[in-house]
Amino acid sequence: MRAHGSLSDIPPAGTSDHICRVDDAEDPAVDRAPGSGVPPFQVFLDEGRVVLAGTIDTFGADRLARVLTSSPVDGRVVVLDLGRADFVDVAGARTIARWARELGARSIELEVRGASALLRRMWHSLALDRLAPVRFAAAVA
Amino acid sequence: MTPVLDHPAPGFGHEALFYRGDDDLLAGLLPYVREGMGLGESVVVALPRPGLDLLRTALGDDAATVEFLDMAEIGGNPAQIIAVWDRAVREHAAAGRGLRGIGEPAYPGRRTAELTECRLHELLLNRAFDDGPSWRLLCPYDEAHLPRSVTRGALHTHPLRSTAAGPRRSREYAPGEADAMFRTVLPRPTDAVLRGIYGPADLPATRRTVAQFARTVGLPEEKVEALQLAASELATNSVRHGGGSGTVAMWVTQDAAVVEFVDPGQVTDPLTGRLVPSLEQECGRGVFLVNQLCDLVQLRSSEEGTTIRVTTWV
Image (tube, rainbow over all chains, first blue to last red; front, side, top):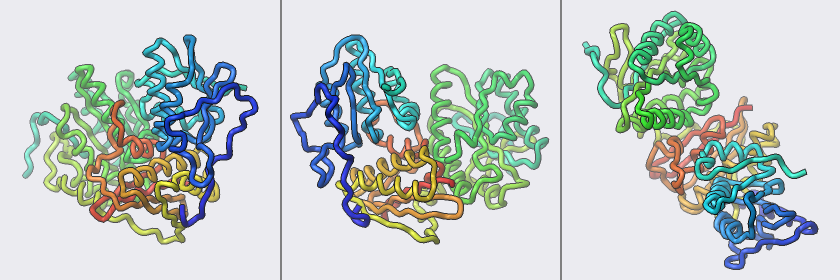
């Protein structure tokens, strides 16, 4: 917003505990915050969970979809940890719901941990649970 | 003299009921509800709490078959009410069961801006349901406590008015007022206004600035987050569909924090954001969600541009 000066996007997420970060090679710069050089969000694997950290809005939703789809998941349940997600908009929530539907088609259940009360409310208001069943759980301690 | 309708016409029967006091209200509602039960219809009642409790008590055991909704909860923002009826109509149509509703969006105690939006809501109900399945909606108006302009206005927004002899056509019904009202300019703020201009690169800063404003004026964190999400969705709409940029204005009134988004684009459908979006629908979810999350949302649009004013009560 020009009237308020240039504001940088979120600070980079810590990476010391990351086992594996999932990158999008197709278009890595598509949603970088202006002037920050830092992607608004990161996706990485940690102790079997897919962890989403940062800010997911409509301009990063396509990249998020590609990253989630290419995430190496197996087993009957996949855990998506949103405990470090600062902000998720409608497009971001729909992207997660579509991923859940993709997983469901492979008989894999998606468990979402650490979702904010607002995200859950959004999920209900938009009836995203009808797009794909998702189990919400508390944040990882 | 306007004839009484012996048999309600098929389609959407939207009827205003004017009452003075509890006995008068029950005299209008009880026969309507019991007639619906007798016809095997589902009855959904959305009233403010006093009326809800009054009707529930008066119905006795019959209340168990009625769905009661607190209008202050499902319709605090009048722009979210059509979605409630939309869901109900779909569900009951799918189940092959008739539906009749009672809805009192304009109840005493509402602020002036809310009553304005109630009027637009009532007009848009006709737009939303006139071509759909048959169902009836009876809308009580408290003549003893609402401003006269509101009760008189109900004759313009309802094609039918309730009488002791049955529903009559309202001669004052003016469906064209929906478009006219949608094109009006909202009253300008009289308080100091913070303004900013945003473009495609400014969305993160826009939502942060709105969140900061909301915290500064003392809104609870739940409302701050809702407002931040609303800012993101509405600014995104400006960038994607509204000419690529817009202006955000923020100000405080005696009882509210107000954030307003203006862009040069035009919204041609006044029902935008009011009907439940389909699961596969790509657009139209942002305004719908804002309507669900925020206290009062006012959308106006014309060739001159689009304004969405989001009011949060403090």
